[in-house]
Image (cartoon, rainbow, N blue to C red; front, side):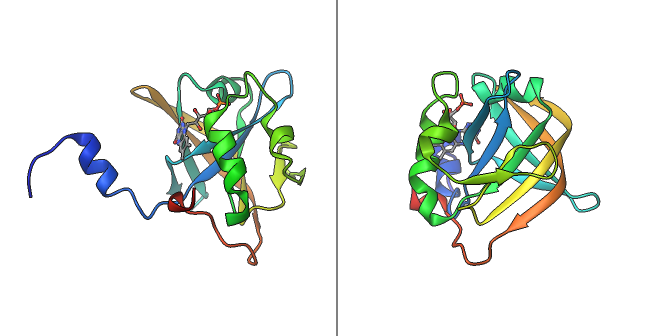
Length: 158
Ligand SMILES: Cc1cc2nc3c(=O)[nH]c(=O)nc-3n(C[C@H](O)[C@H](O)[C@H](O)COP(=O)(O)O)c2cc1C
């Protein structure tokens, strides 16, 4: 064991890791998708999940204005969409249209449920906490969707 930099140590223990998409909506009703590595389960009763969003992201602004998000676990066939949503900003483009992903209306807040995904969770923002240059949004899961036929995308697949 040797002392090293934070970036060396954290990248060495990162994988295997999952990647998710958070689906949000801006104040004008435009849907936005953001790729996230930083997410976690935070409660069983009621079920809750948290996502950590950088303050420079358009999605951060969306979450301030519209207090819902869908957490989507992409399937392997969604790797191109995941790269696009992790490298382009919703300020400049309609990512939902650009990805060409199929979706249907969710039960909770009419945020899209992505059909090609392995699972989707519809969340209401319960609380948020600032964490340096990111904010952690904790969402209470209201409805869950699963497609057991889909193989889940891992970080190493992209
Ligand atoms: C693999 C991968 C993981 C990422 N994880 C996060 C994350 O956990 N939190 C975050 O704020 N940004 C993360 N990003 C960066 C955002 O997805 C990226 O800045 C995106 O373009 C922001 O879009 P927006 O401006 O439409 O919100 C990640 C990007 C990639 C490619």
